[in-house]
Length: 435
View 1: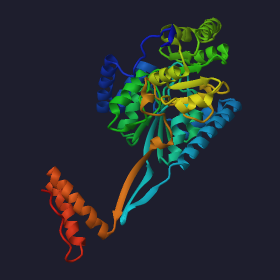
View 2: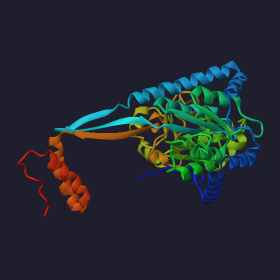
View 3: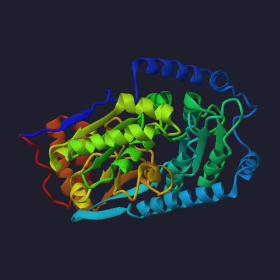
View 4: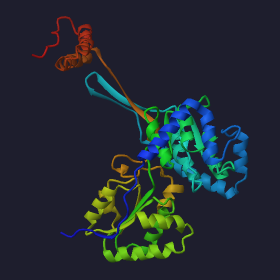
């Protein structure tokens, strides 16, 4: 039976953690929990040359940041955030409370309750990714979260990026801090006397941020663990090789560790795409980073059939998956493992990252096998409740008592027995004990 052909093989995919990173983060978190803001200031000076009198921005500073911007930037940010908000509101509308009588007198239900507070991390680093602000803040606010604390790293030694501050404020954050990396996560998780410790930490970041979230999980919730960004394009021979190559390089510029993959249906098409990538790299403004990512992590596979293409994609479980195929519906019905799916050449990952309204905080490193990305439901607790009539309590109590006896949990059995005795009609038989 024919099998796929490897046209270009990439390196091993990086996971979100490693031993050295874990040790560094552990030491930092212990220091930050013990020494609070003094440690935050020390690390901020060491890594970012940033030691302001107060890490929190005042309303006046936030207004001044927005005033520095071209009005078009403000308007475009509003456009992007409106799309995110509309989609989050539509998602919330699907999450209805439930109440059902499953048998006479036994009523069960669930309700969705927002968490009280969220810590949103908006990354900086190589690029000021201010579009990330709306991806965690807006769904949290639409869900009904009372307090959103936002942290973003400073521009090295020079304060903050005005577009990021505008985006954070416009998205609805209640408090804004200019501090980055592990100290930012620690500030939000521990509180440090500055804020109340948050219930959930949310947002993308480098490997140290991801590891801090991993170690803080349990003390608070997290959205998900994300490593280097990924794109996979699944294309048949009807696709445009130049457009496929363009989209692959669009993600390659993120980071030297970005995952960049193409699954196609013929070796000839794959080699045309490979040639296009090399030609476009030669003139790409960010080729210094993109070339590293493509050289180390770029991969092209020619599947022997559409079914094999689907199997390869689902095994890879990419963060972003683009479909450049003639029969979109066939693939849409069969693909299962991806963070976000982009159907057809009319859309691209950049739309999802910046403006279209779906969320860009997505699972990487094959985590799409078991989770989706951030959405409004991430900030809601689905909790259950139950109530019943006296007669139903007797019926259920008899069964419960017998089950507890089998498990030898006698105190549990007694809680059922006292209710059977209390609510049973006079003369009714007691619960029968198992042999």
